Image (cartoon, rainbow, N blue to C red; front, side, top):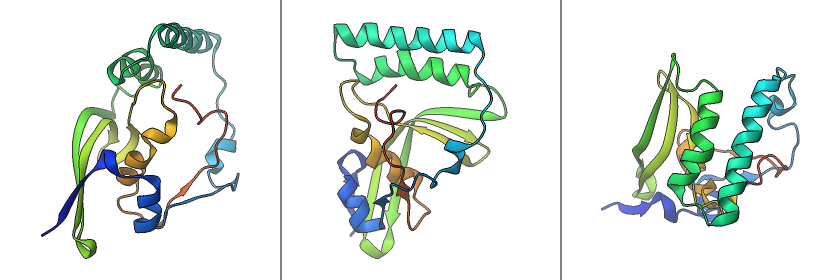
Length: 165
């Protein structure tokens, strides 16, 4: 009989031991981060500044729970990125189960937000309390995002991937 593990209980250590995930500090691992990106318009900068100001205002008053993080930060960013428009589809609280036959293990849980293009997963979001660092939701996201991969390398930490904003 297979053992069932909640996705929220999976740690980075578990992913490394079971699936060979490892941290890489190779700055060229994600070449897309270094590609020429389109300029952000003045209006987009103002919108991003407003989202950041809203987040900082709320977090200064209280510890934000998951739903507030999604409402104040995630939803406006998805809107700005046009992720609510075709050809993309967006789903919330997606129940996912991953079975690993050779280990008789099943990992189950929910993905907070999943953006799809047909069957291709474009974006996964796992939101946690605002006071927590990105590492809190990272094991769960990596498990779902790498379900068909044998080896996944994590990008080295940068100022842009250290916080939830």
